[in-house]
Length: 361
Ligand code: MRU
Figure: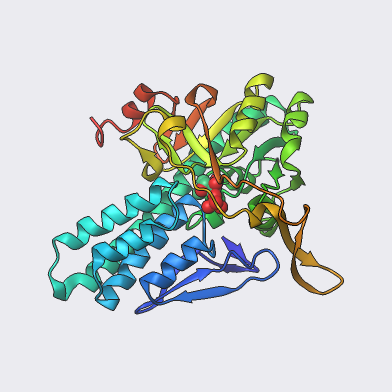
């Protein structure tokens, strides 16, 4: 994606032993880059959400293993520390497994180069898969645009499953960018996504930079908009999808799926195959949901115009007990379809397996 006329990915190898990322903790108020030189710096960046989003934390984990190889440290121990940062996204463990498999068979002399090559392959594949998901999703938007005879197609999305959540293009927003670039009129309802406000801070920022029309809404507004025919389609990302098509995504996604079902609005989860956990079927029971600190719920962080800087303020009585579940699970029965790099699958065990029969016969 372009930022002020320059093409960026969210993560790249800047020089030997130095991985550079866009520091998402500073967006939207400041566009800054952050250099990471050790696996523990990478683990801290994932934990502190300097980078986030399922696909991107998978790539970050891969680059973390490259940095572990450069540091010549104990690779399984480094993988365990990176794995411990965030539990819900499948992509993180998928990338660590793939890196460890590649590193298991190489000689010590080849370790750094093998790790570099595999991390770069994972990163390039991520961008390519996102581009493909965009092309498949474009057709869904085009169908609606034809039906609406040129009126803008209203997409609702939750959290940030765009370019910033992957290496490029994103998942839920990839079809939006593809449609916009193809000249189809689109408009995006952007859920603010409390408590960390990834929608307000990141989705609004990246859609704005791409000049895609969008409107920020409070998290509770989606049902009302759907009742009034103002949402044509919902696209969300996913952190872990079961073999049966249950999808874990940012907390609040499930409520959007319920509202979509009640109002006959199609609800699609957009995810690459690296997000599918073929070992589980019951998402509500089996997916580990990250719980984060209560301070994120008790406070809001944003730009203070009067002070001219970012500030964090408390929004509840001091010491109010708060719970902060990071994700929820939308059962497959509420998912209209799962859009992957290979195309659209019904959210069923048979549908997903048919699409990936060569990998999971
Ligand atoms: O806590 P975050 O910001 O990492 O959560 C991100 C999401 O929930 C995305 O929707 C999800 O990762 C799918 S898109 C990569």
